[in-house]
Image 1 (spheres, helix red, strand yellow):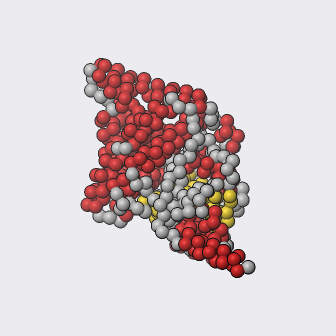
Image 2: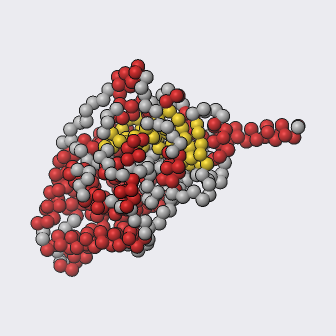
Image 3: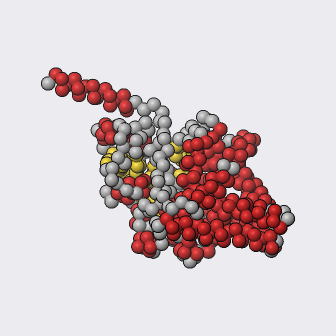
Length: 457
């Protein structure tokens, strides 16, 4: 598959997006109402979910990789892959200094990686901070985007990609906190030729701040554990933006990042699998990021995630139905789509049909089964990711699953809104607070010194 084939499958026209959404929801409504006229079909759907659940429960472990041994062997052969580490920053003066210092001091040969920060037309002091950092870290390179630049984060990554020389491209958010051993941990995975990308587990740095951030921490543990199980049974691993690493050749196969989407990571996930690449996940080490701290921020962020996640199925529906990914991945992706999106939407017609026909609703049993499986997976994920006891994991799973219910109104509102509004490429920036970086103080001192020199002259 080539870039032109992907581009031909994309239709940025708003009416086409609305039409596809209306058709998808119409099919969901008709099929859901049809369940009430063919009660046996409910058991067919429940059977499919049960088969997937059993596959996940009895998922075989992946082949063990001795990261330390393989990394040392690679060191001896002086054949370590070259990494290009990228981040797009717009008005990130509070956090960009910590990220750059973190990335430039990773435990990896300094001549085998580079750091690129794209200043996406910041109007705060991000450019000044980056100039100061370039004097301290020779690996750091920067690219300034103008006010007329297009494509959001995807456009920024595509623009800098042509300047990189890495075999593997790593992408981070500006607030990322990256463990020093991350690159050495990735080397053994990328020695497997079918691995096109690897996603690090995301952890919430401010998880203890309040109930919302604690819920996001539990959600990330659930997500990584579920991804790991899906990958073990031959399913579709997914990228999550921050802490994603993509083989350069795989990225080239996919035509780079799609600038017609608001969720570049989810879109790239589909295209990698369509190009016959696998995506792996790595539980340790994890990349940390700031969680949003209130419901308003969470609502806006999750609406964007849900819209981009649903949109990718509309964009690539014909390629997905062609079976290009293979039966196992297509089966896995289809059930994931039904469970995450369509099942929530189907509660509306299910309720209407139940009232109209005076039947019991058909979907609560399926939804209950899905929630039970998610609860168990979250407990396993919390225990494994944070090395806690079963007692602690279970106690954190209870509020964690209550927190997860926010996805119901999010997905319901997003899918209905997509039927009305045309496609909008609006990239909403998450505000990062930072942790008190001293770089701005250094910058102010330097400016004072320059002014003193100029006045003396």
